[in-house]
Length: 288
Length: 288
Image (cartoon, rainbow over the protein chains, first blue to last red):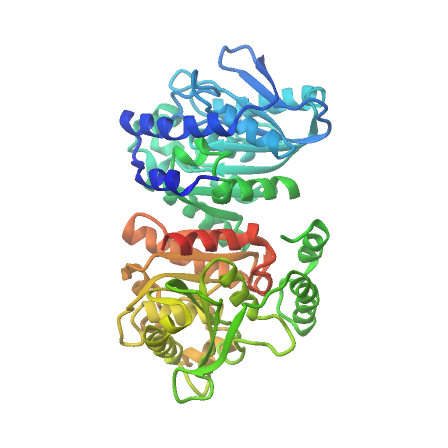
């Protein structure tokens, strides 16, 4: 758990995403992870789930693991950047370490990027990775019938698009999904260049590209989360999804605001501040 | 923490409020509280904060306590029933025990009931109790400048009404509030008889009686929570509040869905299942 002094430093972090803010986030969490330990006992790196150089995944597991639920993590990066590992940092091997500490096998994956690979390439890459996992994960101690998808920011958009059927395939083996500060509907955020890079410049296509209706129609249980000090657009996107769920289902999915955290810190701190989010995530995976 | 077997029993509880469901909730949590211990070391009962027989409060504290934050709890009961203590049960002395276990002084209070005492009697009783607490709580180890209000269901409505200024007084000493499965706006729930008992039968008054605009204008930090298996109206009321907050502030308050729980269990289990809600509540009070 973050001690009081680190919690105060967390609250001082700028929530906006700037080079300075990125550096400050890394400077806060890297030594905490190094002290605490963040890496899974066994990590198999850069396994190919497709032909593109970005279609690679890492498997994080433990010796003797068998039949464990599988957490698949898609990083953020504004559709045009980001990676499963930031060299020289604990991110996002910390997701793998957190998972194995909770008796879960983790897969951290990259995916193809915009603008070279526009919508729905992300959803298609989720489908391809799920197919790989269904075939191979038992050999790493994972249960191919208990896959939980988790995407952060643009990664959450790809998970949502996959659940909404945008890859053209039904979700098989996927028993739950975590949508962390994700974008579901491009229309209200088309002023952002990264959105246009992925979804394109044609507003007439945005309603069809939105994952909201598909999520409402999906029966995969969801945990929707945002950081308290998230990008304002992420709050708006999440609440719009809740509105749609309520309007069509008369109840809402699990929804959590992660206290004190920012868009970056909520995932960079996984393993350090379980009280804020990890405990809810572990409970969600356990019961899925 | 609830062990796996009790968690399975929790998930089997009927979320609807019926005599059978009430009995099943009590039957599940009472022995768990008795095993775990639920009562604060010191309880002063039935202190009068007003002339009405219902204007009574209990103070839950610990020997040697001094300068602690004060959690004020208002029970639910559909505006027409409910009490700070249900004789022969741990409810809601468990709120007091949870609070003292977290270095917080608790006040559990009753308030006048509808239809004899209609809107805004609840908000007025919160104001009267806050005035009593401001004057007396230091003698019980509480800090009169660090009051956190928490209301469940109809009790949350009264807290919201108070924060919205419906008692005609500004909130003094109140540094935060927890709105747990509360009703903020009578208009969408006027089909429910308890709502009409408290708010009256005149739909033209409902917009003025709604606490939503007042909450949007209040600068008291909020933790809004609902149970995953809550009354559907509670989900709708909470999300409508988030919508209003987003529309006028471009950010939302802390929000938590309490996993697995029902409208009744979320508060009856306080002290037993901290992972679900108590940890978030403790963190919110600590930083307030």
